[in-house]
Length: 300
Image 1 (tube, one colour):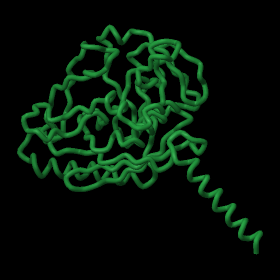
Image 2 (cartoon, helix red, strand yellow):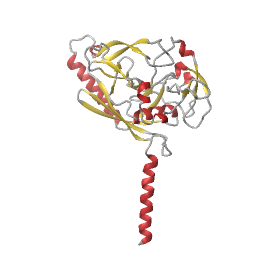
Image 3 (cartoon, one colour):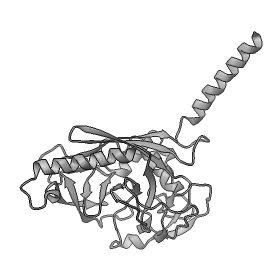
Image 4 (cartoon, rainbow, N blue to C red):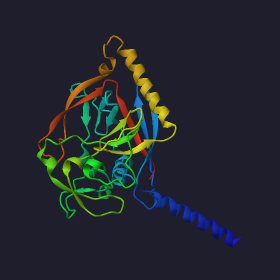
């Protein structure tokens, strides 16, 4: 009886220890394929998309995204650019303006202020530095794609229906874009490599692909695909957006364009590397908000 009791106690202790060991983003319990659930709200309905991430293919991008998601960074942000022509929904940087006097219709979420406010700020997954001594991080993301001379050891993902791709604004016109930064991978290869800042300037932006098929992208990193069952959910969201457009813009010659308002928004306003050299970008902002209600990490 005593031995059986001790055995049960030992199993209980091991179970608790296992839970504790896995209770954090970056632990020994990490898997090759983390999972997240993204809740999207549109026109009063909620759509749950389950994703599989690829740590072996894009280790640094996955760690960066998981850190932001696990800290609630994306919760409440909106699709700020519904690009129907290029079959993309861009998100990760703005929420819907509640003040009608805001002509942009959007409220920018300051990336640098937000991550500095996280309780676990010291655990931010660094991957880009100004200097080789690693004393001045940029808090941006190492671009794991071909144009950045990144060697994809396990075969780069292609964009597909519903896939997630990290995005950055084109800053090629900035002098800072040619500046050299130093990068390292998150998969144990700590060797620093020098790269241009323009390909290593991503912060929190990403886009959801609406492609019918697959497409190779050498300038951005695709790091997640829809899990089985979620393809139909995204198709339902697409169908409901189409139905909304048809119901509200039936007299228009181009209904899809009328679903959005083209707005000029000033970007990179808080990037310390770029400084005051900010520029305007045009976004197709949906008139009926598409909101990322929550991005929840289900498996690390």
